[in-house]
Image 1 (cartoon, helix red, strand yellow):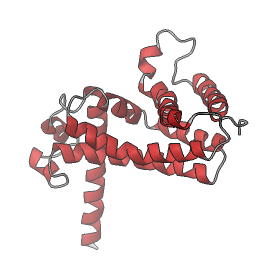
Image 2 (cartoon, helix red, strand yellow):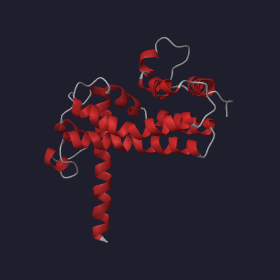
Image 3 (cartoon, rainbow, N blue to C red):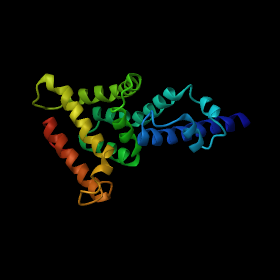
Image 4 (spheres, one colour):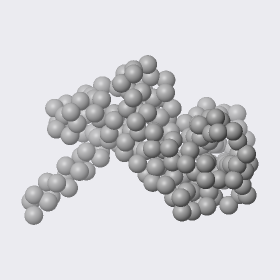
Length: 202
């Protein structure tokens, strides 16, 4: 029984560290955050406690990225079985409830470290492959050489809104995170996806 409680405590502590690290990395980037800050924010006794769960700062960063992308990839995998509309609904709901993830991915693209770019690219690759596969299965009128650019453009349309939401807050009619604005964004993405992919809106 005690062993089970210890395991539960370890899992919850690890998740807490990941939550704190995700927020810190999204707001300040990899270089702008120290392991000591993350350990303190997570309520750990010392920095060494964090290393019990993660080998180093890069391993923690990789774990944050992988945890964040896993449910996104699971949603995109539904495109093999579900129409585009419901898949986009699930994706928008997830990103609006996980506001740090789009910012984290966006900021990673600005980082000059090849190692960090490799970590993020590795996590994004399944998403790119799934998106490209969905595009190829659709009724579209695009040249083969343009398909990767279309996949990248759709990613920017979906993630970019949430990653840059604070930038446009002062200049949009409604706060971009408000229910009304999110519903308009949902409608826009479905229409844009339908027109770009060459099929009727689901």
